[in-house]
Length: 198
Image (cartoon, rainbow, N blue to C red; front, top):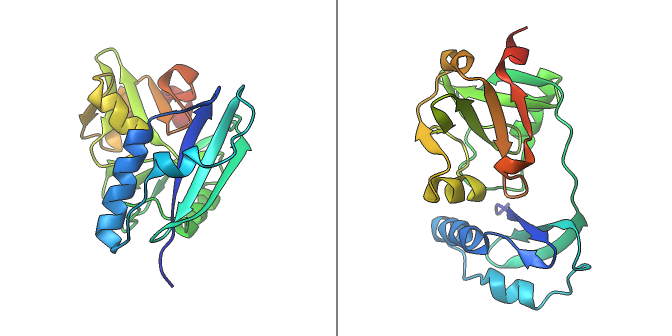
């Protein structure tokens, strides 16, 4: 069975966010897996869009070409508990629609979300990249599983910096923020590190 991929694009008040970053990831995926060409901007311009007010997740599913485009109202997922889980062989370098491994790991923690440790290094959460906060600034692991579009944007704009962060290093930070295409730093989806080690 041929792999399927997806892009979750933020559609807020009639505007698609970071479309060039999503296009770059689609291009990289198609190049790797021998797909055709997909022009996200063109495809989305031909779609009927929701009302112009509010936040929607636009989910584009594709293989060699776009298969479906769907819009759904978006609200932030509540994260009250976070578990740390180790998986030394996990691979998720492309945004596959098949997330069975991630689902199993999350279920294993019994928590709302998780921090995945691979070979002793921090990687990602269930559906987010991680940003670790300290008095020195905001840092994202250089060992992430999936290089996210929001992560790339924040690196390019100098708001976060890549850094090697081991599982042991986590305690030296004050807070962990969760970011993805739908979640900005300013949305404050985060947890205090001290709550992880109670």
